[in-house]
Length: 98
Image (cartoon, rainbow, N blue to C red):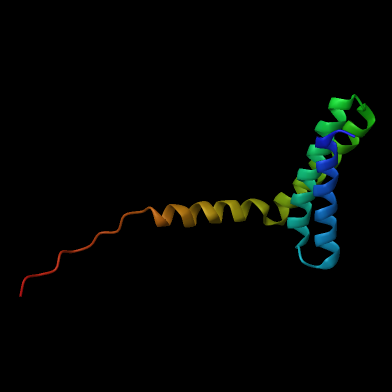
């Protein structure tokens, strides 16, 4: 079995396990599964298995859409804003002599 295909199935199984155990929200599990099915699609393409490639690609698009609509992109934007705030200079006044 192709290692990329195997790692894709492993990502998808981690997403499913997180979803069914209640440790991951639906959109986060869908994002992890989308990453897994993308790896599976690349692995199936390398092996020349076109039906599996097509199914994995379609499932990747559906899961990525679910991740995005569930607020998946919000976390990315929020973390970039938090990082930007850390590097924004703040104006300080010098201490006045007494």
